[in-house]
Image (tube, rainbow, N blue to C red; front, side, top):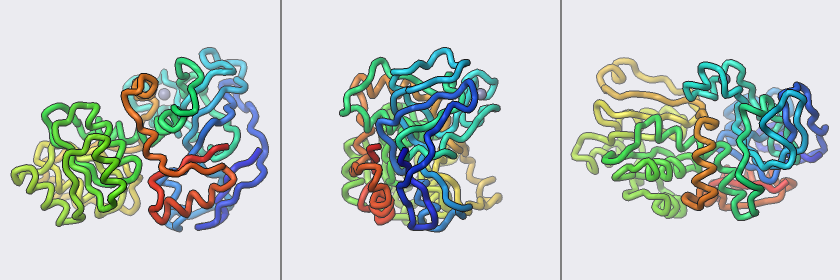
Amino acid sequence: MRGAVMYAPGDVRVEDRSEPRIVEPTDAILRLSATCICGSDLWPWRGADALDGPVPMGHEYAGIVEEVGSEVTTIEPGQFVIGSFFASDNTCEICRAGYHSSCVHREGVGAEGAQAERLRVPLADGTLVATPDVPGDELLPSLLAASDVLGTGWFGAVAAEAAPGKTVAVVGDGAVGLLGVLAAKQLGAERIIAMSRHAPRQQLAREYGATDIVQDRGDDGVAAIKELTNGLGAHSVIEAVGTQESMLQAIRATRPGGHVGFVGVAHGVALPGEELFFSHVHLHGGPAPVRRFLPELIGLIWNRQIDPGKVFDLQLPLEQAAAGYEAMDRREAIKVLLQP
Ligand SMILES: [Zn+2]
């Protein structure tokens, strides 16, 4: 089969790779209908994450079950399924509490690379959620978004306690930030402030429910949020970048007693303890337990209540994966869907 492999920063190649096989009796093999490039894939592309030899890329996936192991009972060949970047059993105490991405049996799904024609998914019964039927092509982008960016933006909004009557600010205008806006709207937030300097992203943020746009960053961005909130700061802030600047901007834009939901993968973030102590801000975040939200999100997409697939503003054949990385790196595309 064909699959994308990163050899070095800026060097992604689509090449022949071995077909995935059932390894454990709890595995499933999927034929992927769509896959994509994640903002987090840009960290190694830009050299910010070390690469240890050629690495198969991709951890977002949706597709048709081709084969299941002998112990799989609820997932069967022919179903269209979506799963998250961490496989989870959905039965342990941590999963039952809603934290599937810290499942005691968790396994990374991305290790074998989802930017490919086929994928092995461990713990199929716990990890995969089937759609009511095989979807038409028009639903593929939105269903694929549920695999990571929608679930991650949603978790950011839930962790920030977005709710009716609240003002929510969103730091980061990538796909996760934009879908954090969508999630905040769905959760009933009264006012949603998107922080973005890019006109097409501002436009999509407004379509998803943003009521205000702030272009400033850093201290100026914090001041702008305070100005919009009677000097208090937002009740809820979604942090969807993962840098020191974005994290401090999020904390400082939150009012005392408010909540930060941080879902940008942290790179070199060190928080000043004394400032944190006096901030009276709740911090909650981490790798999103996407599996917790999948049934609800699939329902919203299936019933055409949300359209998260709009974040895919470029679709390319899998063979052109490298062009997709370049487009996202240069911010010419918000998110790139790859067609296997
Ligand atoms: Zn578990």
